[in-house]
Image (cartoon, rainbow, N blue to C red; front, top):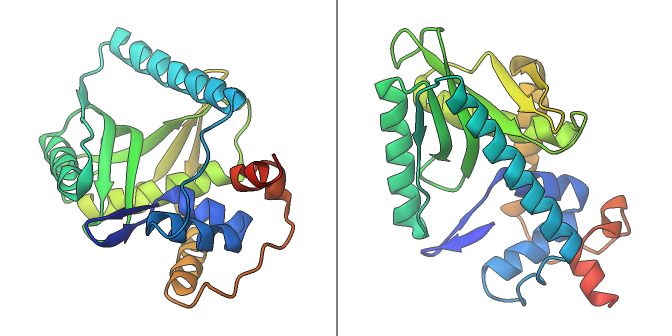
Length: 228
């Protein structure tokens, strides 16, 4: 969640956090608007996991290059205008039919944005032409977790807005290097329910939320800071 040029910009992480704890949504909005202190820096363990995740992503990128895939990389830039520029470059790469788009910027122009690991061209007609795109994300985990699919549904929705058809599949590249595919349509209804619920709550008064104990408390950086 970010407050950029006077507006709140949301991501798939915000949907996932809201499912874990509605009060966390309230806290994150206050932080984004500068009304609360920012989140504490990540722990050494969290930093290690993030670094290993980056290494896994780069290793998959290298494998694609070794296979001879044509790869178009999108550079991210800060600020709303930077986000818009990255989104335009991503759309241009899709229209040009790039085989693989790395770090695509997906932005609806209003409040939802995402940075996909990989967009893969598939030979399925769309408004782009005789091809379309499906999303693939790298994850260190050895098995697929439910929130991975929620995140991929989010990216797939943004891709659909560009190409005019819903991607048929979405892909998770696990830490074992195994790639698993899932049908987007099988999870789309649940994803839409989660997203609409989040939007309803964000549009309402969140000041009455209470920090009820939930499973996420055990890993919440805010709780860990307050108990330090």
